[in-house]
Length: 394
Image 1 (cartoon, rainbow, N blue to C red):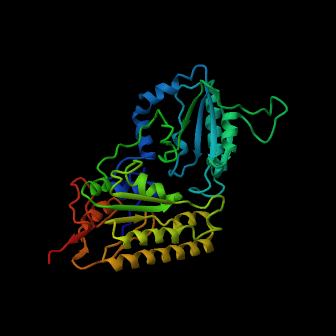
Image 2 (cartoon, rainbow, N blue to C red):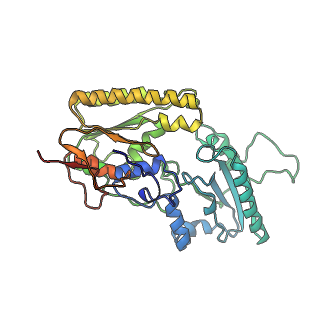
Image 3 (cartoon, rainbow, N blue to C red):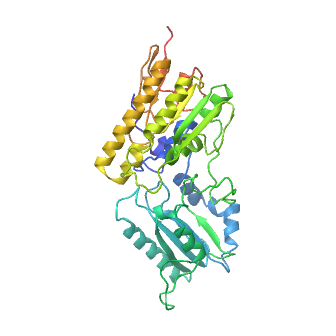
């Protein structure tokens, strides 16, 4: 069975040219329906003007008269984390843009063109009397919390280079009474559960209820989910519709294997595939769980590096990990579904009494949820995307 739609209307991305990604893919897997999200939500809010009517905009507009509006995010047209043409002016008198360059989801070197486009837009604003400038250009990989230089530069105004005159002087840090908008879409990157941040939204995330995991847990299905850090949120937070934590801790277990820190994926292309597989194998053979899901991220994360030989090693490692898991499933007489969240072909084992559904001609990732429910013996909710299998009475 091949599922070949991981973008556009199958995952609510803006156009048929937009590439799917891990986040929208896992939303579709777990939620069973298609929600407007990320870039599409922002597009709709801008087109309707609703973005300027909410409490979030009222909150930041309080700084427009005497403070500075700081915009922080990825400068890109990749649509995965942000999109350049969504930056719009609406009343701020002093604007500073803190740029994170995108070295992953767009072509290498394309940042120069993005900066030129932004500079032209800021020049247009300056002609209108707006004090609008770029405050900082930073590589996205240096904005992680494990690296403090981004925080020091943007908030404290501390940088390695000091300027000796006003012409070369730094634009200045973020200060009290300023407003800050982080304009990336990724919900897990923009959210901190412990600090309860953010407290305001320009565009609220989609409200997603009745996810497949919630349905299964409420029907007594015992669930195990595992991946390494870079994809752990995908098999939990995104899969469960932007929900952190368990639906029922007595029936669920989530295991996160720490990803390598400070090592690029092409240097360690095997990543934690074997460790993930071993955890899944042990969970399966324990017979404590009815549903086990994992994400083995080698093909995605190593592929992003552009290192072909490393990607080959990574895919071989993923293949070995999958075999370890499938062998365990065969030992307990289970059913397995092998899929990919964006771009790859997916296959499902055909077992006795189950055949591929013939009338779903254009299957998408959101069809997986109903399919998995059927495999557990349940009828999926009527508003879910249709199943990809048909159970044949013996």
